[in-house]
Image 1: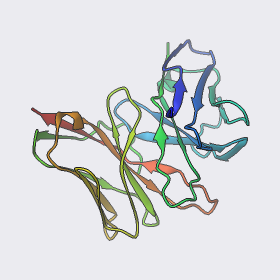
Image 2: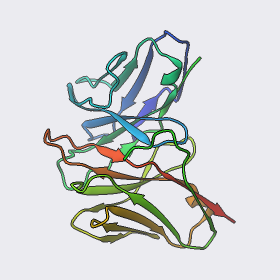
Image 3: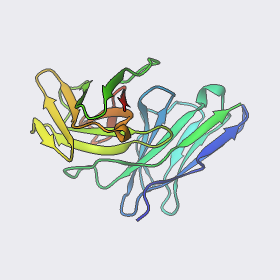
Image 4: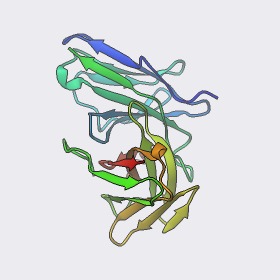
Amino acid sequence: NAGVMQNPRHLVRRRGQEARLRCSPMKGHSHVYWYRQLPEEGLKFMVYLQKENIIDESGMPKERFSAEFPKEGPSILRIQQVVRGDSAAYFCASSRDPQGPNYGYTFGSGTRLTVV
Amino acid sequence: GENVGLHLPTLSVQEGDNSIINCAYSNSASDYFIWYKQESGKGPQFIIDIRSNMDKRQGQRVTVLLNKTVKHLSLQIAATQPGDSAVYFCAENIPRDTGRRALTFGSGTRLQVQP
């Protein structure tokens, strides 16, 4: 029973390029969350998605960032025209129905984005 | 609340001692809390959770205490082992009018276990 799978583990992009981060949730989980973590800091919420729906994107920067969770395939976090300040670890988590009594997330191992 | 550019506080304990990690959460309406452990280079790992209608919950070697009066959460680790060395985050669920349920993470505490 594979956990949350994120790829790539490490991604290096030059300023101005695009970064695509992928996340496949755990089997049976239909809710996906993306978080960003800077070194020595906590996790900051970015976006919460269900299949084909964005439920809450209140943590997403207004420009250059987008996320999707299509009917088929992984969830994608896309960062266009990356800048050095985008360098961070991006974690994906999934859960069962969060309206249920307990819905602790399962996290992936993260993608470490470095912008050079 | 969210950490903004601060270095993580560190708790250093001797192997075999008990550890207590504290967390002040942000919202009195929060109804569900989780402790996560994050080892270097890895994603956060679920440790234990507690609902707001409880004040204590025990797991294997870990206990979570919830004090809603002062909005305080603590994680107690018994007989701390070197493998417990990690960063520990508390997370709270703040109910939203929109129905969104997504966890808000605290700033984290680094636990260092001395052999």
